[in-house]
Amino acid sequence: TLMAERLEARMGDGEDGYLWDVQGWYGGDIDKFVIKSEGEGEFGGSVEDAEVQALWGHAIDPFFDIQAGVRLDIESETRSHLVLGVQGLAPYMWHVDAAAFLSDRGDLTARIEGEYDQKLTQRLILQPRAELELAAQDIAEREIGAGVTKFETGLRLRYEIAREFAPYVGVGYETKLGETRSMARAAGDDPDGLKLLLGLRAWF
Image (cartoon, rainbow, N blue to C red; front, side, top):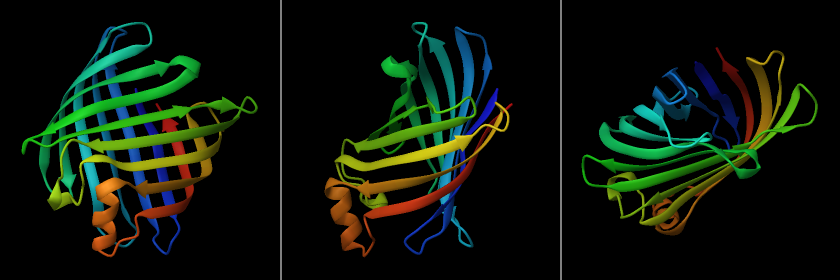
């Protein structure tokens, strides 16, 4: 299966950009090979962040897989990581993806994502989503401070033309936190952003 969870245009604050979040897997219910890719950039500009993960997933109960493997950051600079995480369906039907990353430079970071599909009709679905990023230490070259570094949340309303094809509209908000917020302000960047989202969710 290959799923494009988010293929979207993001507009707001005078900065129009794009984002992708895709993953695919091959295997059975117990063991599978998983590949993930996320990234974003600005229209008319270069890709700002891009990563690819190659993971082995093993079911630890009927609802959760443990995942281990490697991650390669392609932009803004090449950096490799070891990955250990879990992915699955938490209580109250929240889809959760959480992982820790140890880079080839000894930096330890983590990311936790959660989303929930609320059916309004058989085809119309409202999806709240939240993402939290953390770092165990300062990473000066990436303007990241130790602690909780970023929080992102959004609300997407999609219409399933078919189960495999669903355009959506939404709104998203992200903010940098703690020392990372201070670093962004010192560099002259706005640590907060509100975006209008137009996108597509598809799988095959």
